[in-house]
Image (cartoon, rainbow, N blue to C red; front, side):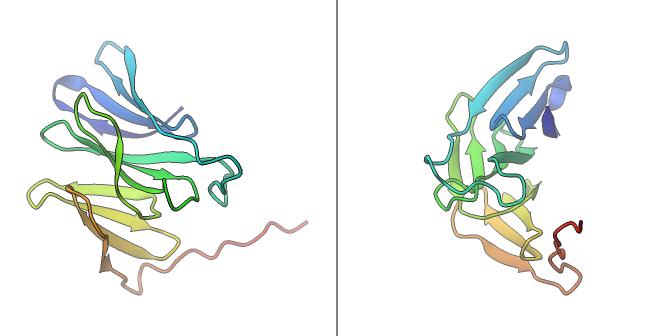
Length: 149
């Protein structure tokens, strides 16, 4: 089941498969090709708090065909912004819990939303330490509550 989509010239679509931990290419005729399967957290690792499993979300495509996407595992070694260059292997470029992603191709900057902290982060497409781009009061974290019986 696809989670997010990025469009490419010529009708090709790139998708993340949330629970499958995968990134795939879907051709205009509907043929799909798995480009990457992300690693599972170490045995006994803590997965995402709400869902209980690793989650691949958000995807954007740069003009050179590089894909950027988010992987949430609840573990410090895998959670973050990932990059997949054409013909390459996925690699994490920034450690950051997040759930939304946008690319400014002009400045080669990724903007990453973190709904838990109510922050929008910026990260260069070359990777590195995220910078809080906005912590405006309009971005408060949601109030999660347990269901009542």
